Length: 241
Image 1 (cartoon, helix red, strand yellow):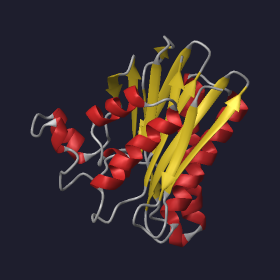
Image 2: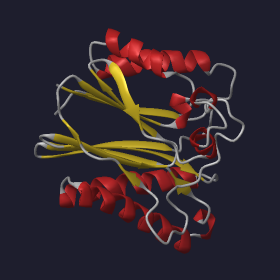
Image 3: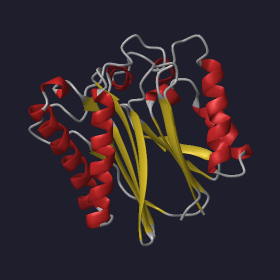
Image 4: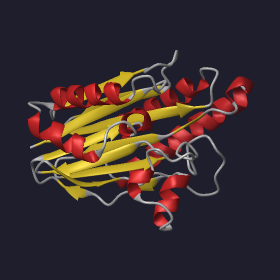
């Protein structure tokens, strides 16, 4: 088992619509995070269905790109089916991030604005790009990257699970080789909106393990979120040697 830590907090909200989970399949591992939308407690159901579907898919099929795509399709099918069965759930949607740790490679995919950051030798190597209006504006050169966090349309998502699609809307990244000294952070927007990448790296360099890393970042998130009606915030941290 690689060093890892899973964290979720309701913030200042009465209900936590985030969900996190993990599963081990021999020497392969699956880490999952989702942020539900839809109100009336159904966002929580959407994120739960997504996490459970992704883990079940991994447990039954193992890793690999086909399994990763199937995890998202299974989650989409479960949510759409529940929408039809329960009229109170017809508006529920969710983001989803899935990380597969295989013997020699690491794979991940996402939909929505929950993010995966990856770090090499303590430095940020990249992150997933949000399926959101502000991220689209960055791509168009209309705003800068750092303006996403406080943009008035930051919660307007262009892709999520729980909406009809003619073709898959999730995004699978090219696999990365396991090179050692790698760290991964999956987190919801309630988390990354309140801590910037420099602080993530600073905490990473000081941390003794993933739990300590998350604890340091959570302290910053709580401080920056004080008196702001904090959203649910969740994170999954994984270290690979």
